[in-house]
Length: 388
Ligand SMILES: Cc1cc2nc3c(=O)[nH]c(=O)nc-3n(C[C@H](O)[C@H](O)[C@H](O)COP(=O)(O)O)c2cc1C
Image 1 (cartoon, rainbow, N blue to C red):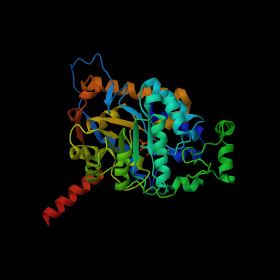
Image 2 (cartoon, rainbow, N blue to C red; image 1 turned 30 degrees about the vertical axis):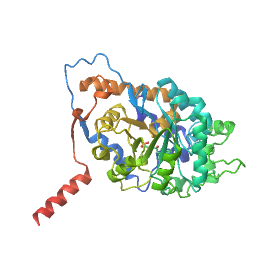
Image 3 (spheres, protein in one colour; image 1 turned 180 degrees about the vertical axis):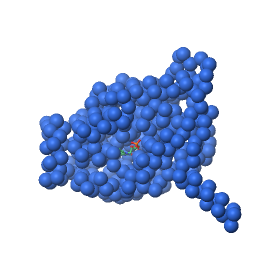
Image 4 (cartoon, rainbow, N blue to C red; image 1 turned 135 degrees about the vertical axis):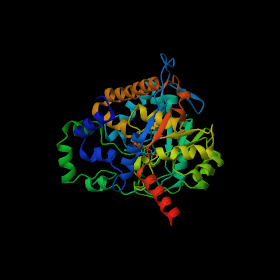
């Protein structure tokens, strides 16, 4: 495994189609998901020579803490589907590499367990599901468990239609018909280990009376402006708002007292005509001003992408699908290899850019960005109207 693509290919072989597609799939025709990646390739970096880059450091300060690397693990529900105990493996990797891991509300591991496994590296992500009160209960649990960073996800007012999941009959709880049975039977290693360890299910929506309350397609629109104000009042630690793609929204979130904004289009899993997330960062940076903490995900597939995100205005980044590909490919070994690959690629690229520290990565390392199709269209429309 020498790249995210290697991990993806291996995971594709080893995982049942239903599971691999749950990870890789996206909304609609999956155009935004693809655009997230291709837009990174259009960004060019400016090589520089003869700087003293013999010693390089990737240590990054974010929200008052030093992390060894400028990236962490994005919140992802049901990671244990990819590999039994995946959440625990990620937690161990987070401690080992001193990076944050954000546990999803929809995770198949309890809030309290993740805090024990990952220690202070654990963040918690909140969905406001069909009941605002049960979401607030989760916030209380996170507070009691000792979490100091809460990420409120706001870009899933309603879960989007993901055709791959529909085709495969993916749902929660699992329904096993002939199609799924065949899929599992042709991936016996995954099926046996999952059977032995127990089929994963969302752990954090379970109420005290034992009811499993997770309804995947229920509205999550309870995460509105009033809720944000309420959350700000009751959550005394760091509060990050995730899924922001508009400068106007970013400004309002900044005014409401959030500690950071998380620029993301959910990996293209929500709106298939959204701009690439990376093309939005610089606009949001310009709106919130220098110094306001910005975090970024969606489309990062290698160390150079992390540099591009930081150079575009992010202070920190998160990895999504690459983490699950690596786990699906080679479990703990795959995960650690992938994190090391990202770190090594970043460090090597920094050497080429004449930059020794992460804090010195800024827009000066960007050479140019060839216009995206959307921008080309915009320019030609402007030209056409100026001619008219
Ligand atoms: C399988 C999967 C599950 C996800 N679950 C959640 C979730 O529970 N909460 C959340 O805020 N984001 C969730 N996301 C979105 C990620 O946090 C992140 O924004 C996205 O994966 C970034 O895109 P990329 O993986 O293409 O880089 C999920 C993404 C994937 C792939």
